[in-house]
Image 1 (cartoon, helix red, strand yellow):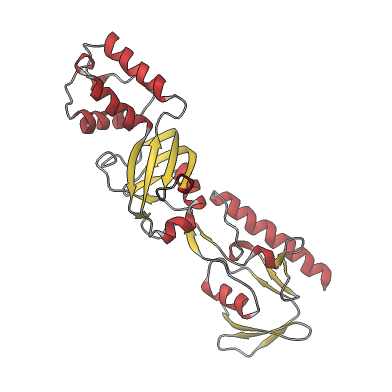
Image 2 (cartoon, one colour; image 1 turned 135 degrees about the vertical axis):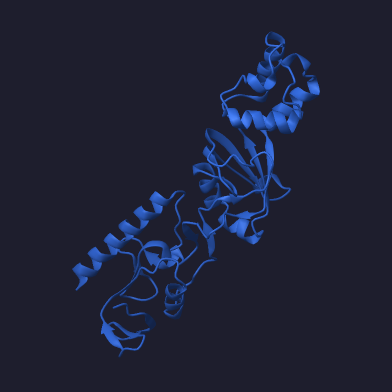
Length: 280
């Protein structure tokens, strides 16, 4: 039967735990591994610990844009993302990696990593930001222009919709032609320099408006937690309260992927358990 701890009081040689609808019980050592549950932070604060600012981390981006509409499931092997959080250059955070279009916007390793690095900034801005995507990060803008101009010259009688000079998903290339050129039948030979410029912008620095984080509360972890300055990482023991230990997501630790967060939980739990067992 689950017994919720509602209060922890520090005693001379241990702790008195008050359990919901049960008599208080005494323990020599206490390990808090409550994840992002508010009760864990409250118990730790009552024992003298500091909880850093909390915010969701590792989440997808909500984006409503015609370029993404009805393309859910479409994946890109490697893109470069830049999240613009303000007008200053230092407020740009970037990450590269695979990208996935979803029903509500964008996901994939690159987005999840970016959300982790910018978790607090996005939370403070209510998840309003500008996202710039380079769909061809391995090719310079100059090389992209040369490829488009060469294709216009050598394949002038082919439809732009039917011939793409880059390794992009066919469905996304077709969508760009529909949106940027507004003509499914246009031939490569009919493209002018303005058309070329527009395609370069969409391929190398396409701008999308982030309007929120993914729906359904699907974020994996919480950014923030028990201040790391207050924990002895040799044993995962509190520097503020002898005999109190921490493990997992309750700490101010969040990795850039879910796997790192699992490893954090397993490793910190193991170290805490080892020291608790040896000290008894």
